[in-house]
Length: 280
Image (cartoon, rainbow, N blue to C red; front, side, top):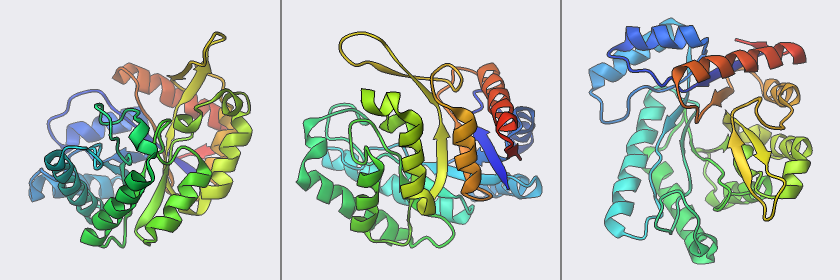
């Protein structure tokens, strides 16, 4: 089996052929869909044709809007956009449509005491159901990226969320780094990541590959860093990814420029080779 590597680009492009050239230079076989649901049907189909002709898969269609926003108008806009993005994911056969669960704080992806309120959890479950029920996806699914300070922040909590949402169209987007939010998980990172894969494996559709570094100071401060600049064991992680089967997308993200994406993609391939894992 082969791992499908993808990630950001951080270079501009004007059309599908320019986009494809960048994808090939980076060596990606999984891609983030390059336009959103506001694009015209013809533009969407042009990109989809290039994807299919070049043996690429769409690993993610992103939402990145706050479906738990305290402001009702902003929440409605986010919900409408999430439904449109899930419909796009279904159209292009994406592995998943991904969002965070949302925040009740001033920052759309930030921490808030209300994020852990049982009533807000119920609202989140109802919101996810509403998005899925509006589209009824068959080829794709809606998924939630874990975050350090909102639901789900553990694999066990993600399993509970899957049970509570109770929809076939709900899957897992795994970001293990976002759940390394305490010293115990940091120093026991390989065991924790293995637990994520063991518990969530049957539901995982897409994965974010990052790294972490914790300062030796008071109090706890854990930094997200690029793969190779932290402490995670990438040969072992990539074996876990491979075991999920073909077409599970592994995305590198949050890098500053094209050159860094090129460098980190090379690092991932080297780590995969060391682990005996083939990257498509």
